[in-house]
Image (cartoon, rainbow, N blue to C red; front, side, top):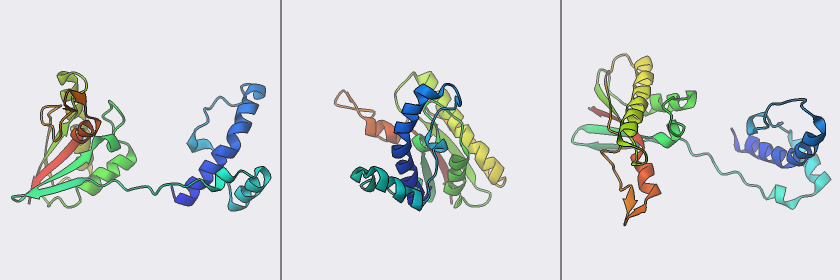
Length: 196
């Protein structure tokens, strides 16, 4: 979604929300669909200007939408081996192992430099929250989801899948006996490893 469209959606949200709340009590069950950002009205520039003038809220003109940062895997190369580390917080919902369309596209893009015919190891990792058994299962399912996408796109690759759970952290899950959210986030990953 472009910044201008995001801004329009945010403005529409701010403008429509009071009417939705007031109308919800009197409207009955006309439409039971929950109001989400996906089904808010999109306003034209003219409509936005008209609503701004009508209600004269300076807060609306102060709304800024941050730039959307594209997904970038962490890539390291050492001794001829390459590791492409994919942040599972971006690819998967919490506790899930299914890849959506945009996440699948990100996986394909992350593997674009893998040489033709390469032997590729796809390894899933988790943080230390939850049982070791659950983490191993989840990490392997997530790695398998990545392998499934790669198999569909790159039938030339020799793919091997594994899940290590929490056993191979790249950062401490806790620090000084206290939870370390930043470290746990780094540990939740799927790695695509290859030589060449």
